[in-house]
Length: 393
Ligand SMILES: Cc1cc2nc3c(=O)[nH]c(=O)nc-3n(C[C@H](O)[C@H](O)[C@H](O)COP(=O)(O)OP(=O)(O)OC[C@H]3O[C@@H](n4cnc5c(N)ncnc54)[C@H](O)[C@@H]3O)c2cc1C
Image (cartoon, rainbow, N blue to C red):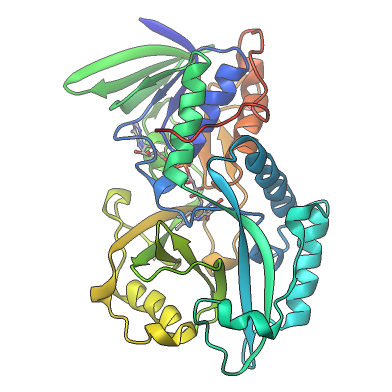
């Protein structure tokens, strides 16, 4: 039977990040993924590597600071995969967030980002508005420009796994985790590949199964605590009309929520929604009402596209956020990653709930710090903030 220091469930960005961090720290590590890399949330995000300007409104300053730091690291180590893009926030006569509020927000954003070049912002002169992809100019008071990152989430995940494999880590795929039995100093892990059940032994099991993490946690014996979380669906649609100037960050005309309208592979990606979800994570799909909600945004801000219908949608996808259970709207809830362990001292299982694509490297570093007392001494192979990530072919 094979033995590993770290065994990870889930080939999304978090599983990939922990695999790389464990291998970089000199540990033996195995990642098991039941479908394909980034098959879950990590190919269905808004694809932004960002500080999260809107999280300032809910006072999540530590999260924004950490995300801006990670954005800078990724712009450096993953320059083939993460691009700095201009973001435009149009402010109309009836827009809720006024230019002075946005400027204060962006000033705090710049402060938390260390005032580096990527945190610059300012008004777009009215003479330049005609270059903004046909953005509605009636009742337009101002357009604010700032910068954030955009990536291909699935390719980023694959690049991180590739980096980990280059450091000696292993990948089992397709491989479905089915059961874990805890002993005092190790975990017996069972997974299936095809018809075969395979057992391996781990010092620590990491549950990075995204919206399936609650199911995976319930397969651990003796039982471990599962936090009270909600699943919230976020839908995206793609329309074939390309926008080229940058990413538009607009208020939905329906309810004032922030929505992104983004260039994406020669077309335009629009997202996202926040719909409570109680079903099976495997069955998540954009709902017709969500598609109409997103189309209404485009029709409202881009008059040339006012006749768009659901027939014009060329691609649609939905992912699930894992958020702390609460009655308040998803928009206002904490986006901090939740980490739980089976015990405080020398944990044998660590579960990751929620989190951000942007923060995968910091999350993985945090995981390694939490589980290091359970792991044997090892010789470090690399620092993850120096490992260059290449675009997979
Ligand atoms: C709509 C939406 C938009 C978002 N936009 C952004 C954004 O723009 N920027 C940002 O920073 N963050 C964003 N996020 C957050 C980010 O996408 C997620 O936090 C991140 O992708 C979660 O990755 P994960 O690895 O935890 O989970 P996942 O990517 O879901 O990976 C879990 C993996 O586990 C596998 N799995 C499940 N069960 C098993 C099993 N039993 N055995 C083996 N494998 C199993 C699944 O197949 C899956 O591949 C967004 C999230 C959503 C929902």
